[in-house]
Image 1 (spheres, one colour):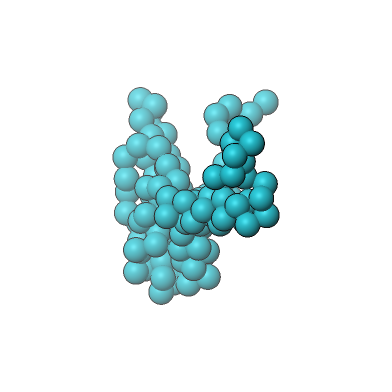
Image 2 (cartoon, rainbow, N blue to C red):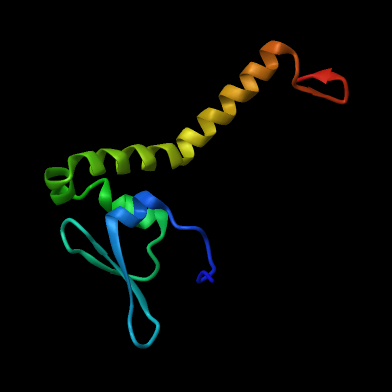
Length: 103
């Protein structure tokens, strides 16, 4: 039986080692530079560090590139651009309507 919670991110798991101390406090450690952070290994925090980690860039460049790509794909700007693209395609094809009126 699993531990519950959100499913793991395979790339995130390659970037950090997660720890829970005897008091149940969580932390995570960058696999490249050894930076220790308190708290959960949240996507934004881990990838924010990984994309700027010079040690990761030098020692595991492929992993660093993957982290940058994953971080960019999840940015709000990219998500909004995707939504805008879909809306524009719907407008062009005439499928975006509200109460029978074109938007």
